[in-house]
Length: 142
Image 1 (tube, rainbow, N blue to C red):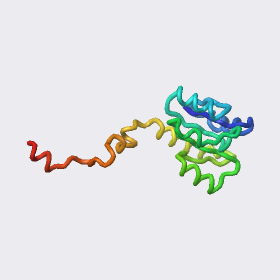
Image 2: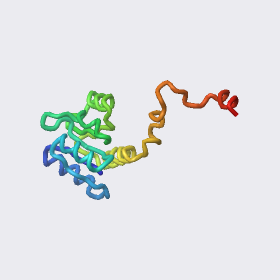
Image 3: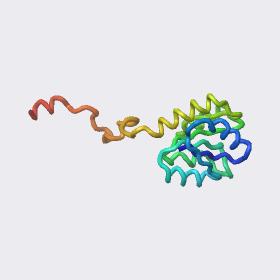
Image 4: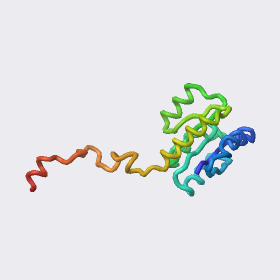
């Protein structure tokens, strides 16, 4: 599921033209809050959003269990750094380059739909607990 939060018709139409040939299911949200609700309802998603929509920031979507791709007409190094440092997945420059959109969205979708145990096995261990069993303790117990 791809959710877009693109406030103006021109940007929304440009993105739609790029992804029309794909088999991606796309939903359009009018606000960051609506995108959060759609992501919660539809499971792991990719959200393509303008950096700021109606006074809300893309950062408000980070906890949505989705991969966030930020787009903006003024993409620069500072936006890239902000996105990566705050938990976003990537950045798409405007105007949209079809190959770049396909590459970034495909990778984000794959990452969003992996099983948690594959992507982050460390979270299944207690903090400070040894990752491997102490083989001496195992040998003594046998």
